[in-house]
Each structure stands twice: as structure tokens, then as C-alpha cells.
Image 1: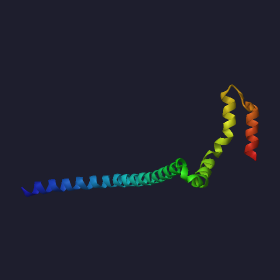
Image 2: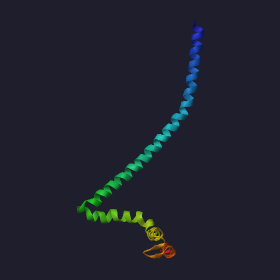
Image 3: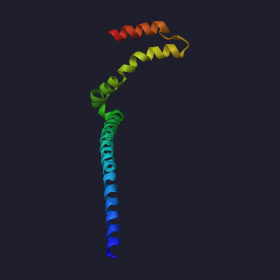
Image 4: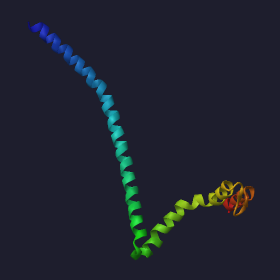
Length: 116
């Protein structure tokens, strides 16, 4: 009676060993995914904290000096790439005639401004 039981135990141990080897690669992949997500969440939380602080400085009327020193340069830096597209979009949305003239004139002004 002891021999069949020991062969069943050996079969079960072999099966568990194979499953453990298969799960090890999945566990490693899951660990890497969790580390990646933790890093992404850390950066997002940091960005969120900076945005909230900027909003508090912007809204509070007692902190105008801080707003001019911290928030205004950051907003100008973020919106700088969009400055050239403002005239271009105004010309193309109004049927080709914007406040600055035709669309080709706006494009040429934009290209000149981009070179400077």
C-alpha cells in the first residue's frame, strides 16, 4: 500500500515543481509591472502636487509676488509652442481670412517668427 501512495506523492511534487517554475516567470513579470506602475504613480502625484500648489498661489490674492515669480514663467514656458499657432488657427478657422490677413500671410509671418 505504501508504494502507490508514494508514487502519487512523487507525481504531485513533480507537478507542483513544474507549476512553480512556470509561475516564477509570471511573478517576475508582475513584479516589474508593479515597479513600473509605482514609478508612474510617483511622477503623477508629484506633478499633481505642483499643479495644486500653483493653483493655490494663483488664486490667493496675498501671494501675487510668488505668482509672478513661480507660476507666470512656467505658464509662459508651457504655452510658448502654442504662440505661433494662434494666428495660424485664427486664419484657417474663419474661412482663410483672419484678423492678420489671409492664411498664406499668416503662415509666412509664423515662419519668420519661428526663424528669429
